Image (cartoon, rainbow, N blue to C red; front, side, top):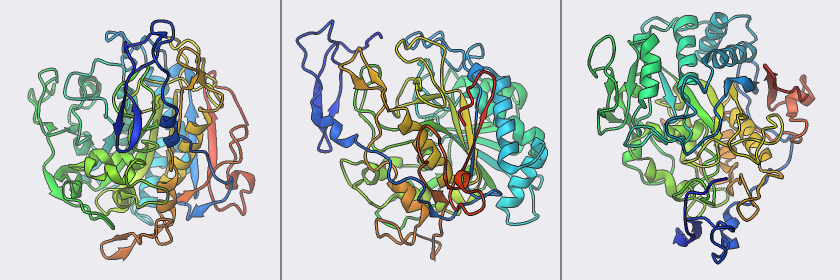
Length: 489
């Protein structure tokens, strides 16, 4: 594997030693290996199996569905070539993304077509027979953490344009939402031109909300309006309350989202922290994972105000308060969410990360040569956020087993940061949380946001409802192998 950094050095940050470079044994034989103390923050392992905590949610309580279609991802892994990005049309098959989303939704809801699936989703969310009503606004929160203040040319992983389009097509064609009533947003990042082009080519009425600095010269005008009126900056309004801690900017969300009736949380299957920098660079991160709960860091004005509660070098100690509970219980964010989704086409091991191959079940990707076309190529969804993230965490941890990088000091390609599951326990039982915090929203106690559980093993991937469909109280995991994907159970 090629290396991008020509020297090795370490710095102290928040009391932890952080990797800021790389040791290349062949080029730099005199360089010292990474100080082993850096690994003290990356020793997380799963707890007990099949011990559900919390109350399962969903039409089929606790159901999580994952579809995998290996042929959806054709990128050759040439990560240093800015003219051959993974998100280009020739590298990611939109039709196979559509099929994954469709089959996942139908399986999640037990319905025979996409229209009936969305009817069931809205009715479940509304607590009865009330479905979607024309004119109601649906916001789609995407994770664009690596679309920084310049044109997206690198191969760092974000929510894919193809998966965003597949979900918007579902909302318009199956759920009956007018394109003009859809808002796609990440309030802390610009919207990549590739996303604007692929969406506006089919649905020019879709609105976008991006970070404050405004329009970039690389962003296209809307083909219908001929201007940037549908590419908006956030109008920040106070809308979030927290059960603990002192926040000011993190109380603000875009008015466009405050006024939305529903939210679709389209996040990534992705870790947030990694202690080595032999491809990526920058700090190691703050917390364990970036999935749907932490996706709302892009929904608030000042997410950095929450970092010290999440960072294991600061206040993110074992069984600490998690602001993610409040974000995902808030009547203006989490409580509006009708479905939780994870884009697992090109997953990452860090907040700023190139796509990563997953060597273990159910993916079985090649790993020893990074430049190959095998990728996770999956899509997950659930009506239970805690269940979805529990499955995501188990899948990510499983990829760290027997997965070392022989060209870089034999270090693991994936590591999971300490306390990675603590926020899920807080979300699962907010009134008996391990932190001791009593989570409140609107003067009322926050009830369980879903069910937390670890599977029985990475080999069988069975949760309590898989083991006992009648008496199980936790998660039901359904795997849908498509194309050449292997059946594992």
